[in-house]
Amino acid sequence: MAEPAPALSIAGLHKRFGRTAALDGVDLEVQPGQLVGLLGPNGAGKSTLTKIACGLVRPSEGAVHIAGHPAGSAAARAVTGYLAELFRFPGWASADEVLQLHQRLARSPGDDGERAELLARVGLSEARHRRVEEMSKGMQQRLGIAQALIGSPQLVLLDEPTSALDPAGRRLVRDLLVDLRSRGVAVLLNSHLLGEVEQVCDHVTIIARGTTVASGTPSDLARPGGVEIETEGGTRHFPDATREHVPDLVAQLVGAGERIYDVRVVTGTLEEAYLEAVAEPQP
Amino acid sequence: MIADVNTIAVYALREALRRKVLIVVLVLTGAFLGLYGWGTAETFDAVTARPDEPLVREQTVVGATLLGLAMFVTLFLGTVLAVFLTLNAVRGDAERGLLQPLVVRPMGRVSLLLGRFFAAATVCGGYVLLVYGIAVLLTGTLGDFTPDDIVGPGIALAAAVVVVVGVALLGSTVLSATANGIAVFMVFGAGLAAGLMGQIGEALDSDTLEDISSVAAWVLPFEALYQQALYLLTASTQNFERVVITLGPFGGARDGGALLWPWAVAYLAMVWAAAAWRFGRMDL
Image 1 (tube, rainbow over the protein chains, first blue to last red):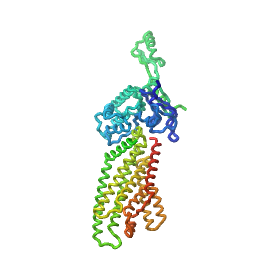
Image 2 (image 1 turned 90 degrees about the vertical axis):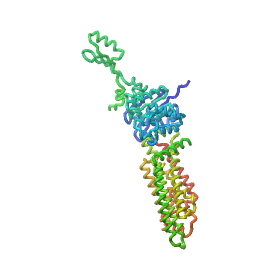
Image 3 (image 1 turned 60 degrees about the vertical axis):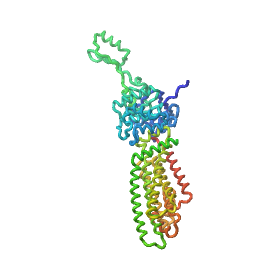
Image 4 (image 1 turned 45 degrees about the vertical axis):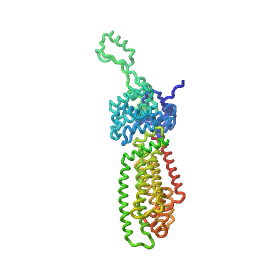
């Protein structure tokens, strides 16, 4: 049986705005059911990449496919859900009307039930008939996420989906993303919140200056930082040691008459890996 | 595609209703028509109280002039409506982030543009026909003046506003909302000024002024359609009455000829195609 096409496939993507190269040869793949985090500093080209994937921006060069269809084609847009970083819904419309409009435009077979379910999933059931202009920014962002999920898309592109949310809202979105993954939906999450990405993403791509500077699982990117052992004489640091070395290290120290109070396997954080990856190269 | 266009048109119409744009316009239009009716009644009372002129039937001159005034105001109000319904349709909405969630849907940009165009054209064209119809009714009832052609001027006037809708929509793909609004009003004003210039040229027998006016009317066919609407009001009126009407403030009427309508349709198609091309290439 043939392998299903990647939910998102990007090869050699370039985008120039005048003389400025926003993207300079980016490759990226998101498989069905995979949750990929896209990280990078401001101006790295993350939003541009997301916009090219959903057909809002035309690439200068390179190939982008959604479930085997060229990005921007009607077939590609039909299987894509998108939440822009800066978006707005008409203030005069209610949450239900916004979703109804998008159901029609997405040709979603879902009806009233789909809208009720989506609003419940983003915690907006009570605000179903509330006008957008009467909603807080966080509520509008939740509505935006619900809108992106209309018509059960195969690929969901989320550009800073939690920037206006409180901690409870962020938790809700994290749970939602995990749920989407379990349903086989591919998600590309564009975010500055490294902790969030670290918690939920299977794979992380870091772009800077328009190119990919690091890519891998969060644990691959977070480098080991050695082992710290707290003894009577103070904290001892073994920078090259790993978890596997812990029993031997403890045995050695105990054999040498030390009293052990605590043992910590130190790992680098995604934040450290990120900062290292995006650092400007030294001349 | 038709379903998508319909969805967007209904969405745009609902926006106009919810934002109370139409209510405000209808209230102000009611005020205008009230004043127009009052003025018409007073004017015709004064005219009928005077002794008859041997060469001119004053009721025809006064009726045509008053209805010409009503048509100018109707065109102006229709243009205001057209501009405000379309000035931010593309770039304005894109800058506010309203457009992106819609454009990523499978319907595509052409359907979105068509939907916005049909909604605005329906509202503005319908509005102009309604106001013109009421003005004709008031002039006929209160002043006993009926235009030589009742339906034609209304249709020409509605078509003029639909052309403005097309121009404003094209402008919205290039300019931000405020700049587009200013630009369309300036173009509209330029068209009207060219029409007046033609009238002055006719009075002074200046071919140059008349040529300038004719070229402007073809470049901006809403002006030619407006002139055609004025012309049809008194198309069958002859002799000295015709001269007097022509010399009046709304007498700059000209028959656009057989090519006017095909040109107006072709112009609208070109404007629309340019808007679709521009919108299709825009990075949002």
